[in-house]
Length: 168
Image 1 (tube, rainbow, N blue to C red):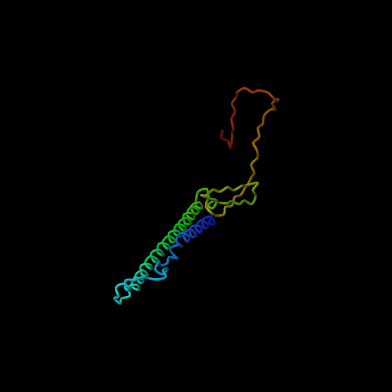
Image 2: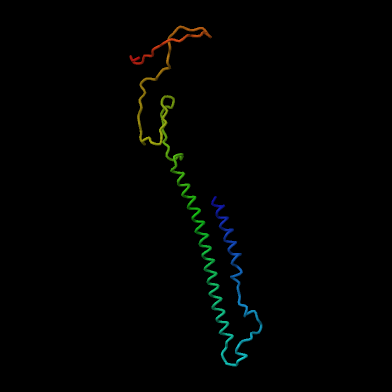
């Protein structure tokens, strides 16, 4: 899952580079010209207007580059924040699953010295501790004393009483 998110993030960053790369190689059109024709040649004032214009263009170019860099940085910051937010959301959901009622982390485990005599099955609410159980007499299966009946014989309705410890 993390590899998938990381891969998406890297694709996003590479696409940002391709989108903003034309702005990074921006150059002045005035530098491309072989011969500049300025106002000073026409008016003879002695003020180098070409240099002033070049400096003004350079200042504006720097402002534009700074603005483009700020935009690029903000886009990258937003992508990083979104990436972090998605991972934190996934972490929160995973943490919720740990404390969910279906989570095995809250279960209790009971151990018996002889599982054939006593089997321990604690629930989540069981107190943690050690208990000693002494078995004095093993229970025997119920025995009904009656005459044997032939196979396939049908009995009519009748009443019977069960007595346990002197109580019926």
